[in-house]
Image 1 (cartoon, rainbow, N blue to C red):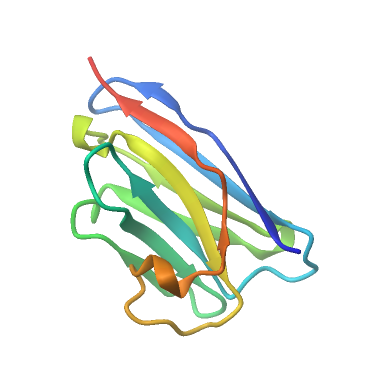
Image 2 (cartoon, one colour; image 1 turned 90 degrees about the vertical axis):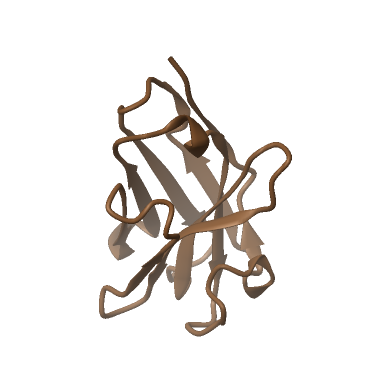
Length: 126
């Protein structure tokens, strides 16, 4: 059974940076798709960023393009989300999501992912 274990959340001032990590455990191979969603109070779950096995392809929500980056480390079964220029509206619980299938459309639909982490809180406030 694949488990996703997140770390790296915390509190930061606007304009600051954070790095989230998500490790896939219980599997010898990194899931084909691994990435991040976030859920803020009163809002729907939002796809933030997604990485894909091979080729270095990525997807990002328009709200984070140019500020966030995602990196896969296949040797560690881990995906990282680098968040720069953080804004108060980035405050949310960030959940790692993964799936064994390489394709799933749209990428930001939560129903496309079978594996979920428990989440790590990110708070951006002055």
